Length: 81
Image 1 (cartoon, one colour):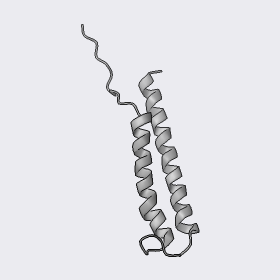
Image 2: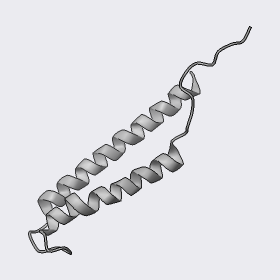
Image 3: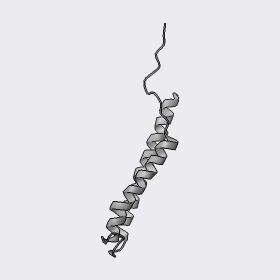
Image 4: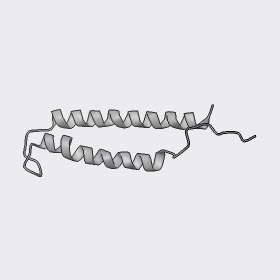
C-alpha cells in the first residue's frame, strides 16, 4: 500500500481522537463545574469550557500538526518518458 495513504489514515485517526477528547472535555467542564465565580468574574463553567479549553486545544492541535503530521504531495508522481 502507498505510504501516503497510511500516513493520511494516521492523521485522520489523530484528528478524530483530538475531536473526541475536545468534545468530552467541553461537556465535562460545561456540565460538571460549579457556578462559582471564575478568574474574570464569569461563571467557572463558562470560563473553562468557552475560554481556557479552546485556547489549550488550539495549542495542542498546533503541537500535533507540528510533530505528528507530515507535509507530503498527494498527487501521483508522473513518469517521464
